[in-house]
Length: 89
Image: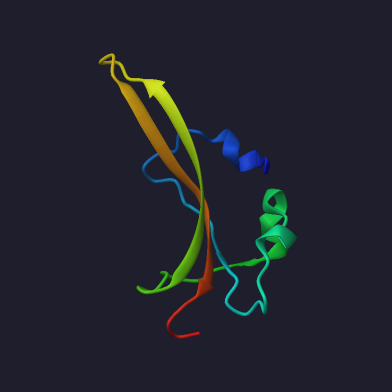
């Protein structure tokens, strides 16, 4: 089980910046070798927009809660993304 401090943010605002990391230059990328709790020291940040047709790993949290209207609601919040392959790389 992977526990991350970023997972404490179960509800994100609509304008929350999601960190995107660049693993395009990493040979034989092994996600188990990357410390997800300290991902900033393992991978550099992606600059700019991620191109269409890129291969990306996305980390997210899922929460279930009762809405004010009394309906069960599922919340999926992206915590980070790692670009593994981009068309121009």
